[in-house]
Each structure stands twice: as C-alpha cells, then as structure tokens.
Image 1 (cartoon, one colour):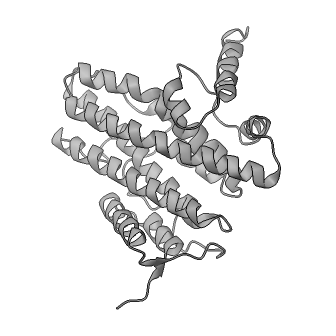
Image 2: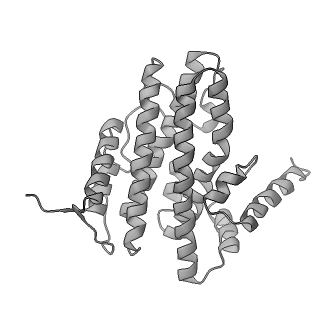
Image 3: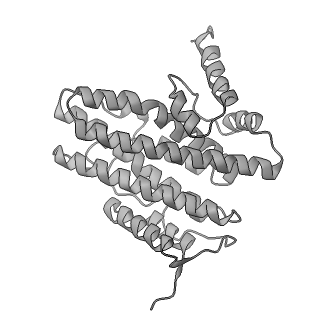
Length: 278
C-alpha cells in the first residue's frame, strides 16, 4: 500500500495541472482521500512550486475585463458567453483555494481542510458549468476571459491576512451580490438548468466567503488588529477594487459580515455616489 501523501503537496500538484477536467478530477480525488484520512498534513512546511502557477490551458485568451464580449440572453450564444464567463470564474476559484492550501504555512489544521473543501466545491461548480456550456454547443476556452481574480491572488501571495481579507471577503463576496441578477436573466431567458446551477453556486459561495471571514477574524485576533480598520488599510495598500452596489445583504450576513461592516459598504457607496468627480 502506498504511503499517505501530504495534503499541501498534493494541493500544489493539483494547482499546477493545466487541463481543467483533470484538475477538477484531481481535486475531487484529493478531497475524498483527505476525508478518508489517507493524507498527512505538515502545517509548518515551507513549500516551493516547481511548475507554473496556476496551471491553466492555452485557452481562454486572457484580456482586460472591458474586452470580454457580451451578447443578448435571448440568443444561445449570448447565454453561452455568460456561462463561459462564470465557468472561468469558478476555474480561477479552484486555483485560488488550492493556492491558499499549499502557500501559507503555520495555520491550524482546520484552515487547510476548510480551503480544500472550498476547492472541491469550486471544482464541482466548474464541472457543472462546463457540462452546461457543452450542452449549449460551446466549450471552455472558446471565448476570451479576464484574470482580475487571479491578479489579486498574486498581489496577496506574501501575507495570508491580506489574502483572506481581499480574495474571499472582497473578490468572491462580489459574486454573492451579482448572483441573483444573473440567475434572473438566465431564468427569464428560459435556461432553468443554468439558473439551478447558480442556486448551487450561491449556496456554496456563502460558505466560502464565511471561511474567508472566519480566518480573517482569527488572524486579526492573533496579530492584535482591529478588523474593520485593518480591512480599510489593506484595501488601500493592495489597491482592491472599489465596492459598488447593489449588495446581497442577506447572503453577506449569512457569510459572516457584521452589520457594522455592511454599514461601511453602504457608506463607501454613498460617498462615491455623492462625489463631484462621479
């Protein structure tokens, strides 16, 4: 019988895999092995990536967000382009969860199991969207996509506190806000299968943002930092995207945002709206 492999080393191996289907299958296999107790876990190991990060296919071509095309939801191609954009987000989300597992040493064991669970669920989301994309006569890689989510992953690679603050709590939390309107568009266009997939994604993404909130809170307590002011400082330091409404307040509450944090969001939006430069 083969000796158990370290969970973080295997997460890094999944991360550098370039084929999306093989990556998703590898993540599912790793999560299953971890649940069965077949992986070791060295939380203190400082690992080094031997391959390119993240592993991704030659297509889709990555372009600035403004160059990602859009079409009307009344056409099959329009729906395919939207599903493609969502599939790309989920593929990147698999990578960012795997990166959180292998990159940051010295966290509690539960941190690594949390982020492996997130990677497993993101891989499922990608697989569901990829299958639906194929049902529409398309495939992942057919249309251009943007890399803004992974850009923030790279920016925060040196500090787990910044990563927890600005990737799950900022970039991924925007998905909670966008999901209901996208779901409504797809349902109105008669694509109930896609709408059902977005229901699954919203349910799971609330949990993923909660993981980020929980570990952000843990790190702030560990470092003696006040969470709200620290978050405001990090958004400036790392040039995080400006938050714009509308916000899915109930989903954000379920994901662990406090009422004070939601007030901060509203205040920021009001300040931007009333700025003479806008």
